[in-house]
Each structure stands twice: as C-alpha cells, then as structure tokens.
Amino acid sequence: MEIDKDLAARQEARLLCRQAEAAQKILGSFPQEKLDAIVENITKKFSAAAEELAWMAVEETGFGNAADKVIKNRFASEKVAKAIRGMKTVGLLREIPEKKLWEIGVPMGVIAAIVPSTNPTSTVCYKAMIAIKSGNTLVFSPHPKAISCTLRAARIVAAAAEEAGAPPGTVGCLSLASMAGCQELMASDHVRLILATGGPAMVKAAYSSGKPAIGVGAGNGPAYIHHSADVKQALACIARSKTFDYGTVCASEQSIIVEKCLEETVRQEGAKQGFYFMSTEEAGRLAKLLFRPTGALNPEIVGKNAAFLAEKAGFSVPSGTKVLVAREQEAGPTRPYSMEKLCPVLAFFVMDSEDAILEKAIEVLTHEGAGHTFAIHAQDRAVVEKFALQIPVSRFLVNTPAALGGIGASTSLFPALTLGCGAVGGSASSNNISPLDLINIRRVAWDMEEKPCTPCADEDLVAILTEKLLERLQKK
Image 1 (cartoon, helix red, strand yellow):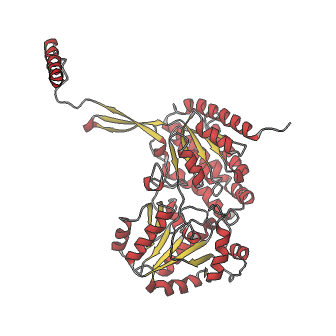
Image 2 (image 1 turned 45 degrees about the vertical axis):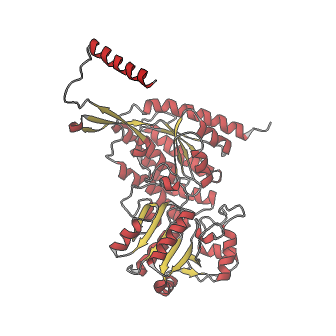
Image 3 (image 1 turned 90 degrees about the vertical axis):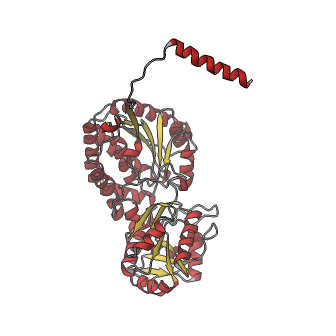
C-alpha cells in the first residue's frame, strides 16, 4: 500500500512539535550555566563533523564547494559560540536600581526553523545554538533538495545536546520533505516563533502563518567602488566574496557601481584578478539561463563556478576566470543582471556622477534587496557617511568582502546566518539574528511616586461620582 507522503509529513510535524513543547518545559527551567554547557557540547561535536557535513551538502545539492562549506560549518559552530559566551539570556538580565526596574529573560518556547538549500548544515548548527542558548527548543524543516544532509546535521546537534543534559525532543527535524509538513509545522499550536531562512515564497509563507516570525528577504547588494578607494584591494574583496561557496551567501555583492572616470581602471585591474567582462552577446546568452520564465532563479546555476556557467551558456572564458561581469544600466524585472544571482555573476553599472550612483543603488535595492546589504569601498569618510544616511539597508559594509562582512565573519556584526532586513525589507528585525532576538523581556517595576497611595474617603468618592453624573446630564 502506497504511503500518503503529505499525510505522513503532517503527522511527523505534529509529533515533533509535541515532543519539542514537552522538552521546552524542562529546558526553559535550566539556569544559564546549564544551557551554556549544552551549547558548548554542540559546538564541539558539530565542528568535528564540519568536513563530513560539507561534502554531504555539496553532493546532495550540487551547490557551492566543500572547502568553503567547511568554513561555513566552523563559522556556525566556533565563531557563533565565541560570540555568545558570557551572554546572559535567561533569568535576571539587568537590574537598574535608580529606576527600581528589573529585566528578566524569558524563552519564547518552540521555534519552527526553516533551513535553506544553500546553507543546509551550517544553518542547523547556528539556529540550534542561538535557540538553546536562550532556553528554546526547535523543530527543523529541511529544503527538499537538502533533506539528507540537513537531517544528518540535526541529528548530530540533537545527540550533542542530549549528551550534555538537554531533554529528548530539544532538537527535532522533519525527515519527509513536504510542503504539507512544513505548513503543519508553522501552523502548530505548539510553535511560538518561526525562524525562516529561504526563498521569498517560504518567507512569505512564514509571515502569512499567523504566528510571530523572523524571516529574511532576498539579498541584492550593490558594491560601490569610490574614486578614493584602493581599487586593487576593492576588487580583491569582491572576488573573495563572490567566489566564496560560489556566491551562495545572500549578503554577497550582486553588482559593482563606479563613476565613468574609474571604469577603465576597474576593467583593467578586474581582468588581472579573474573578472571576465562579457560581450553583449555572451551576457545575453547567460541571461537566458539565470532565471526561469516564472521569474524564479534557475537552480541549475546556483552555486556553480564561472567556467561552468560560461560553458552552460555556450561560450568559453580564460583559465583562472573567477567572476562573470555583464554591463548593465537599468534595474527591473526584465533586467536579470539587476537581481540577486546566487552564483559568481555581477552586473556592472557605470554612472556619470556620485549622486547618480546613489540614485542607482537605491533603484536597484528598491527593485530587490531593500533592507539587506550594501558595500562601499572608499577612504573618504564623508562619502561613507553620505551613503550610509540614505541607502535603505540593515548592513552597510565598508572596505570588506560583503559575503563575509554581512554574516559577521570579517566585521564586528553578530555572526549569523539569518540576516534581518527590517521593515523596509518586510522583516520583523533588522538584526543579524542572535539569542537576544529569541527571548521576551519580563520587566519588574516598583512604584516611583514620592508619596504613597492612599485610599479615597467614602465621602470624597461620592462627591466625585456625583460631579461626574451631573456633567453627563448637562451634556444630554
């Protein structure tokens, strides 16, 4: 007898949610020290499995490369662990004597965690660590294209958590890749928050579920190379970022914008560093591969290297080519190079002035990527300030590879694989999501009046009521 996959997925989601809620009642009572010990064991076990999980992810999804996925896995375990050590998330967080105020950290409960195919293992570790650090349990929903590696990552995390004292059910993961199962998970009465990382449709579904949700929109960050920049260093940063895991990090640059006076310098230096500036014909061929007729990104080009993409489009590139670049001047739904491309492909905008560049960057982000990330390469503080005050993003990065800077690997931003886009990007938060985004604050407040409250005398109360009654009668 054939099994109804959707029905089985829904039933699995219900079971895992019940188990997670039962576990959270126990985990939520743990002191900070015990939660921290659980997180440390997850870090240790997941880091040890970083290479195994990286290879599994590449083999299953076909996205990116194993070497960079190892770095992602260790970033999600070791870098995140370092950032949250000493962070207070539960119990008495702060006491403000002069205001007679306490702040107490309270876990949210069960978290539904949606995992993308581009970061299918590192996201599991990162979300589990920030959730458990703050006393929450969670149930993962893998992407259908990455079910095996995500499930393996979740089981490693679950075993590590339980070994360190977490109750069974603290970390759960759907084993059946089904939209029905994911919808059941998000709609569960046991779930208190949805933490969604994925495509626009998945994020929209999370926000449409009726539950509190933290989702992230598309990245489509431009990179402005100002005339005060070290052009060689700027292009090295962009190349490093855009080739990291073959462009699958949503914070990575999607376009380069320069003034006309800098165009030739960028072209010449770019060619030395492996940037291939496509002809109009070549760019047209590749454009047909980037997106499906529906407007969705073609999964066949996601996380593939430049040589593969060129061959797929029917043209050849020199040995050592790292990034394919297409000249572009407009942004919109009919301009594929003006949109997010999760592979080493960039648009190249050349404008007549700094003000025109500012307008173009805003135009690009308004079309797609508002609230996400912008990169600038400049030594002139004034231009950094000018753009920072106007560009509609949550991460404004200066002189750093955007993929690494955006997630907090090369900057002081919190190390995260879920990057909030703020209200302008349709997100509930503009933060790099941390454990502090996964708690509620209970405030204990004492009376601050100088004079103590005294009960009204009966005759005073009667007089007040009589006066109010007369006022109402007069109005009638």
